[in-house]
Image (cartoon, rainbow, N blue to C red):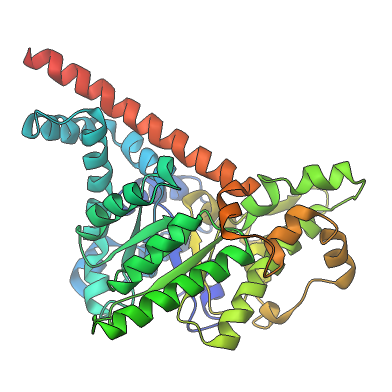
Length: 406
């Protein structure tokens, strides 16, 4: 057996987990596409590796898979629908006929819940086999309402009702942390998303701690409860105000320094968890593969410099494909990489930027500021755009179905 590059990463710490960052519904089609582009010498090896990571037949028979969980978000759910539009047109038509008084928004939400339900059902045997340790699928509250607590509460109620292996994905806003506390008090597993900064992570940990205290006081069963806190790494450095602020101040940041800054934030939160024994687990997403065409090398510091840590790494299809294509250039993992600190010189440069101080300092932001942080605004907006596109897809099916029924 030739280990997959992500299996090699997992070997650096037996507690770390590799998750699939997309719907399980698209895995087969994606894997076939990857294999169609595989070098002849690696095709058989890649096929074996991809089946080890996710194979519905093995999941059904044995309750095991290489991935330990699944994350989804609105753009990924839209991709799921667009990957098999005829199937989803049929599902949406059936929903409209069954619920004739529902409007487009209501049918959209039912459609989204169905994408979550379908994916969660596929990996449910993993959840059952592991006693609730693995096999979760994250379903997200509507990203158009990241500061509307009542709306998020209603969405969370629908998501948690799908099944015990649905982890409710909640934004890193002040209101989102209130919801995470409430869900934790009920014993509901949560994933904190649109989160980029140490102050957000501290707010999440505090919300989880308060929720757990309430749950224990009320004798709530926590045997199958989990909490993960997402660090949207490359988004912190590339879709917020970091580069703009550096340019305005005449501070030259290299691509490596930006990545190291993103990792410094992640490691600071991780070290706090390790020191305090907090039950939440840091989840790494938004990773990238960097290529140096001149030198003929490649790197992915987002995982290489975290190797050896007890993290969840949730990996989208495009990232996994890039890792496989460039594996020979990436080198081996150092199991002590997580212990490395950013250089004082680079850290001091970054700390001259208000945006980075907001992200890195424990008291860098008040909770009211979370939803106004640059990377939060951009990412929430992108998620909202994907939601509107999905609604438009549903609206077209809705109009056609109603017209045919008239």
